[in-house]
Image (cartoon, rainbow, N blue to C red):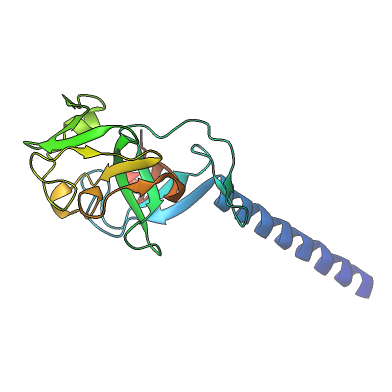
Length: 192
C-alpha cells in the first residue's frame, strides 16, 4: 500500500511540473492574457475586457537572451498591439498601430495622414476621429517615425495617453497582437 501511495504522489508531482512548464512556455512564447484597465480603446475594448495576445506573430522575446524568435510577419497599420510603455516601463499598454518606422504621420481635422495621404484602409483607422494634442500630435505637425519604432494611438483619442504625448514605441517593447476578446462572454469576438 505504501508503494502505491509513493507512486501516485510521484505521478501527480510529475504531471504538475509538466503542466507548469507547459503553461510558462505558452505564456512566454505563444499567447498571453491581459485585462483592459482604461477606456482609451473604446469602442473596440471596454474597461474590464479580457483579451488574448498572440506573442509569436511578431517574434516572441526569448527571456535572458535579449533575442527574439523569428517573426511570422511584421506589424502593420491597423494592428492592435500590446507593448511595454515607453513612458512607464512597468506597464503594458494596448493601442492601435498607426505608422511604422520611416513613415511620416500627421493628425489633421481628425484624420490620420501617412506620408501626406489620408489613411483610408484599414477602416478601423478611417472611422475614428483623432484629436490633436501632446508634443507629437500638434495641429500641422508632421512627425517622422524613427526606424524600428511605431506610432500608436488609442481609438478613444479624447481619453488616451499615447504616441501624441510620449512619442514612439521601440520595436523591442512590442509584446504582440491582440487576437480575441475572451471575457465577458457577451463581448467574445476575434480582433482583426
